[in-house]
Length: 225
Image (cartoon, rainbow, N blue to C red; front, side, top):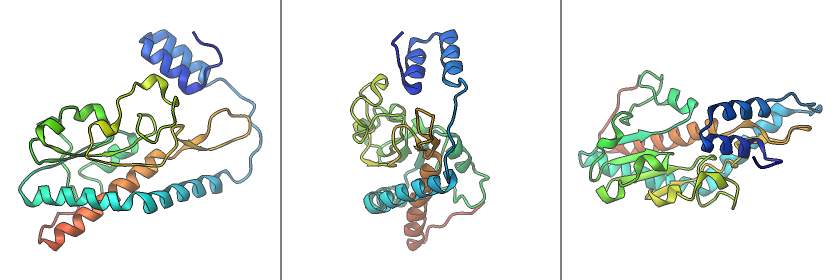
């Protein structure tokens, strides 16, 4: 076992080794009690960090979100299906059919049935391998734990070289650092308080709102739960 591993690297190494007891040991080691120093205004710092990420998405990704919405609208107007496969606990709740306010424009089951000119949204590149050969339109949301072109070199060294860009027609970057946590706290060696759940939900509904608006202009409407 390598020495002086970060928490992330230690968990990745043991997970890849496939040794359950070692994985448990890694979890226990990573959760060891620490002397955490006093830090002011953590809530304010977290909100400001989220705001900075949202600004980056607005400045750098909105045009791609609009482009992706255009692909989805074309697919729908031509009688094709819109699929979504998004991982993450918060996103699973947002995608539920009974989620109040969810227009339910995506099929979330049987994504492997996607065929030519269907539209697929995902943040897991492995799920859509081979879709480009089927001429399925794939839009990807980047996620901190999977390599993409914005991942710092060596940051996710145990996650292989397969990237979202290898399978997606359009990649919309979340701008969340690979650590996911965005607040540095005295006495803790990794940033705390993850941002990906909040940001992915924002990206999802930003894309959905673009699709719904454009479809409504073409006389296509959805029942709101």
